Length: 353
Length: 262
Image (cartoon, rainbow over all chains, first blue to last red):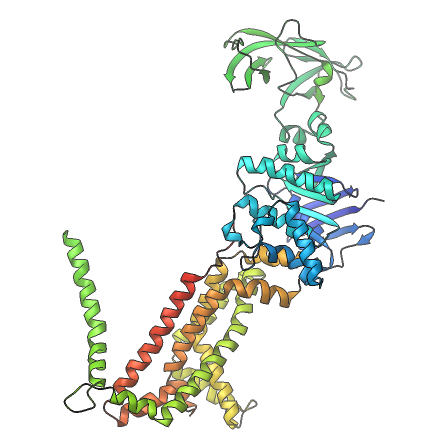
């Protein structure tokens, strides 16, 4: 049985339903990220797990125990907030010790555990500092130590990196993942940053309008998006409008190019419209490039972006972007030039809404 | 020097003269008790007066009780309004402003009508009851200042997130209130406390009409019957107010409890 189970969770605020029939099972020790745009309901789900909000319908259970009737302070959950939420009147030691003191632990026990936690986040030397004397990254590490100190059964991270600068974000997210692996704690991480979610999660839940559009490993989410929303939200994707030529042979036409898809077209008839998607990094312009399929079109623009060169191609009225790695002798394609993009047919995804 | 700067200095000078000349005059007059020389005889006379000590002590006690009762009422109210009932903010703000609009004499007559010895709650039927009623009336008078200072302090911390952080760590309401919220709004609480102290020490209407031996009525009594002591008392009253104001400044300047925010 899964460790954290969210069963048919619904949540409404007045007339607005912000979470619609959300189902999810999380295994013990798993790191799951809720990814989605603002207002998709990801934070509301997290707040329901924490007990700050009550579900309008459905059940939340941890380790087989229903949490719906428990108050926040009875759930034994740790949480790290976007705004750090350290107590300004307490120094680092007292902040980390807070949960232990509330739980009535002995002085020796508290001291040992706090030292252990500060060592885990490598801030033993700052035990006497107050929050206002520390940087954002340090404060968030203290917040993490404070959340972990009482040995919670689940750790919730509510966009903990959003307020930090880019460099600290990357190092801290790796640190969080390392600590999570070390402790084996079941973790739910809320973010709107796809790179964050894809880089540190065991599984990602892509949320849209109160529902989980897709749940899968980062690779599945990126390479095999199942809905148009997931495809467009995660990474850059070319959505191409194609016309079915022969459903039995899985062939479609894009401009003057006929392509045989690997995936079954399904119940569509010849002449029906179909949306297919292609990642910009999937194709290649090289003559000798591997690939069983090609698209020919006219170059609209080409931009040098440092590590990659991004070119826009017009293929039968579809604008297709593709990236190629930069090399010192790379030549930028010129506008109006006719190019052939080669790729494998299995790189195409059929988008079913 | 530019013309607008000269006008600014003239305005400041007029303001300073307007405020300080009467004060200097009062102080100078309070030193003239002994004929021909300046002395602190008037102050000595005031400090050795048993009635001064009794009324001053009574008012100080009332001020302390008012601060405690007021803060116990206002901190949780301001907290709940911020946390759970933000839609009630205009209503609470309106209520806390009422004592500035309704004259103290109207409030005290209302009290006397509601809580007289033949009413359902006969506060004025005993000395203790009248003292309690006086405390409540002081709390009412101090409400606009206390509420604002506490609310302003709460605005500087993220009350909601701090509450949630404490709650998820297992804390219950008393712990959240007294270990996480109160210490972080202490500068506001102390500012409110000093203002309240200054108000109560000089308040006349409530104490006089409830017939309690407070410092305000004593000031009036001495003013009506003596020559130099009232000036000495006025200077003492100003000193108390200024001390309170100075302490407010000190508290807000040395408050190290800067909020932890991204």
